[in-house]
Structures are given as structure tokens and as C-alpha cells.
Length: 551
Image (cartoon, rainbow, N blue to C red; front, side, top):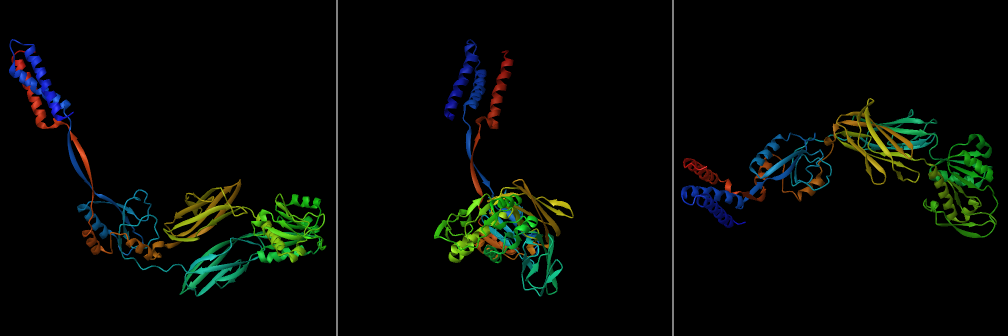
């Protein structure tokens, strides 16, 4: 309804009510004054009810929200208090609202806001958009990193075998000392011999340069059988020689047993059984929970003609050719067959055929590799640092891996202890490929113990390692990230290095706030004079009516 229509209707309503009240009821003595007053306040009442609201366009100025991320790391040479005072003074006179946060803390709430960096620039590469401006301050002189970066040491070795270690240093050390099971080596790379008894042993490594000694400790698990094959044979046979030669090439050990010795000295190892009948093979299979490769013991020259046979897919996956040639013997089964977890390789003189056909030797090599692989139990694998700096975030990737190097779904838990007390329980995060990752940081120096428990396919696994937290923050070692800041500079509005350059940059910063136009609606009768006139008309009529004796 328009304002004019509301006024006409209010006028008509006022006239109608006044006429009815004072002229229609009292036709002989009309009351003009009372009629006028009644017309006034009735008209104003109807106008207030019918008139549209008054609309007014109001412009609302809003400051621009910008996240101010303060990097108050230990590498910073001086406090940022002076910089903050300048920025807060600028906030009072400019259309900006700072959202102050710690640069090293999660930024979920401020992630979508444009941000300004205040710090020394000694940071890692960052995800997401870069800052719109930065204040890069002076940093303290960096500390020298630890002399020993890491050591490459096998986690598990077999009793009595040799294993190598390799030390990686940040600079060339003056001297190196490695101690394992009472033996000492004085080079960055050397070989130790595992003891003849199983157990967990410590490999202690120390390096020295310019009078400063750096030391780390690694754990080596010595197991009875790790990468071994058991060969059972009736007498010296070329097939035995083929396996022993592959032992050196593939890096596994072997144990030789005659069939008589196997009755009392049988070991739970993957086995190459040469000779024996089906009854003996079934008895052997019942005693072992490891796979068996069954071969013939005959030394007769193969008779017949050469034929090509298709290689089983399980062997092709290990590097065998898709087919292999043999000299077929009459009335003999010559195909390599998989029987449950075992392999039946009877009917082939592998030695004679390998001399004639190289691809036959490649298939035999894959048979031995498959025997080792299928005998390998599922294992818990953990990769991560063995020492960190204070406030440095550490990450450990955990997986249960089967003998085909496939990660299995598992329930995994991790806890951090110190002096037997639990100090942290990091949350697990699944990653692609049935792996899991834990991450945490340490605010205090010292020695901590990481313990991981996992369960997969009703099997339990455990892992325990010592972690050393060095007595200085990671920022004191991390250099200025030149490449990152060169990339950021291309999109920054400005960059300052101290209070003076910051004031200059802010003075030249043409920052505009955000304006919003809003329609403000106000009822017509809210003006003070309108309400006053309405009350005056109504009150005056009431007084005159009483004086004239009207009810």
C-alpha cells in the first residue's frame, strides 16, 4: 500500500467515525470541537496501521579481517613486541581487524583469511596460499647440527651371520667408533658378526670432531633363522649345488641335512627336499609349517625331446620367464605344480636342463625366491626418526606387511613413555594402502621410549624403540628458507624488515575496508511529534467530553 492510499483511507476513517459519534447520534446538537478531535486521533491511528514503513539506505563500513601469524620461535633474535605495537596502532586508524595467532599452531579457524607473517623466516615449506605481506626479522646465529645424521643398520639379522652398518655424518668426523657385542670398529662403514645366540643387542656409535662427541644407539634383533633354506638330500646331488650357489647370489643361508639327520634335526625352515617317495613327502609336510620344494634325486641324463612349458604366474611375478624349455622324459610329469603352499618340481633334472636352456635356470631361481618369500611371516614395519629436536614434529609410519609386501588392515596403538610413565598417546591416522601414521612433538629434552602395539588377522605385534630429544629447538638449526620466501615475494603486497620499514610500508598501504548497503525500515508513527499529537487529540477529547457530561 502506498503512502497516499494510506492517508486517504485514514482521512475517510477519521471522518466516518467522527460523523457517526457526534453527528449521527446527536443530530440536534452537533459537537464540532469534539468531532474534530475524534477525527484527528482516529485518522492518525488508522494511518499508523495502514501506512508503509519508511525505507532508508544505510551504508555500513566493515574492516578487512587479516590473520596476523606470529612466529615467536627460539631462533628469533629479538622480541616482536615493538612490531606488534606498530601493527595495533595501525589497526586503530585503518579499516583492518587483526586476528592474531601463533604461526606454529594449527590455523583451522583462520585458514581462509589472508595472512601476514611476522618472524625470522626460518620455517619449513608451507601448504596453501602464501602471506599477503611479511615482516622478516633478524635471527640468532644457527647452531651446528649434530655430527651424526643417521645410521643405516638392519633391524633383524640371523645368528652367526655378518651384517653391515653405515654412518651418515653432517661433516667429516675426526674419529668414529662403533661397538656391538663387545667388538669395536673405527670406520664409518664396516661389518659386524652377529652372536650365536638370539636376542636384542645394542649397536653404539660415536663420532668426534673438534672435541665435540656425538653418539647414537641402534637396536639389532638377532633371530635363530631369518633368511635360510633347509636342504634335505639322500647323497651329494647337483640340485644341492644349484641351491648353495643361489645362496650367495640371493643372500640367504642354508642348512644341509641327510634324510636320516632330518628325522631328529628337522628345523622349521623353508625346505628343498631331494628324493623320497610320496609317503615320505606327506610325512615331511605334516611336520613342517613352512613351504617345501620337492625335487628328483636321479642323475640320469634326460631322454626325449625339448619342449616349452608355461611358467606358473606365481613364478613370473618373481622374475621368471613366461615359459621355459626342458628335455622331456617319457612317462614323467614335468610341469612345475603348486600343491597348497608347496611346489612339486619333480620330473625335471634342473641341473642338466639349466646347462642346456638358461630360461630353465631362471625358473629354478624364481622357485627358490618364492620359497623364501612364502616362508616369511607377516611383520610390523615402522619407519621414523630416532632422535628429534625440541618442538620438532616427528612422524612414524606403521604397517603390517605380509610376505608379498602388501600392507594389511590392522588395529594400531602408540604410546610414549619416560621412566616408565606414559607422557603421550599420539592419535593414529590411516593413510592410503592400509598404512598408519603417528605424529607428535616434544617440548622437553631427554630420552623417551616409543611403544607400538598392533593386531592384524588375530596376530599381535609389538615394537619398541628409544627416541632421543636434543636439548635445543629445531628452529636453532633450521636455516632461512630462501627459496620459499623468494616465491612468496612475487605475490606479497609489501615486505618489512624492522619497525622503520614497517611504518613506511603501512603508510603506503592503500587498504580498503568492505562496505555493505543495508535498507533500514522505520514505521511512520515512531516520530515523537506523531505520538505526541495522537495523545493530545485523544486526551483533549476525553477532557471535553467529561466537561460536557458525555459518557
